[in-house]
Length: 58
Image (cartoon, rainbow, N blue to C red; front, side, top):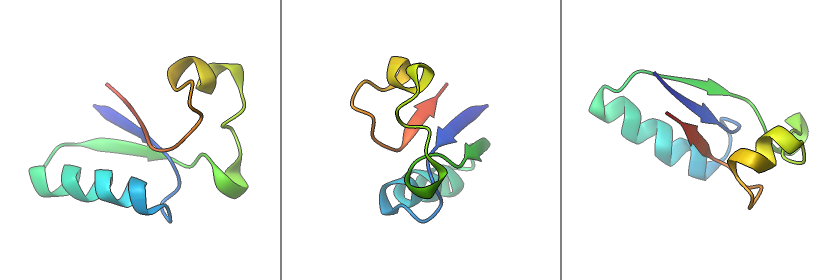
């Protein structure tokens, strides 16, 4: 199952989740970024060196 990292209010995250919904692809979403923080952790930087959302984990 895919995991989408990013807050629900982000327009870029909304584009990804909308597409996944339309395709019927199951996914989980985890709040990260903005007020939720987490973009500066070593774990996140290892997944996405640009420190932006969304990040999709397969």
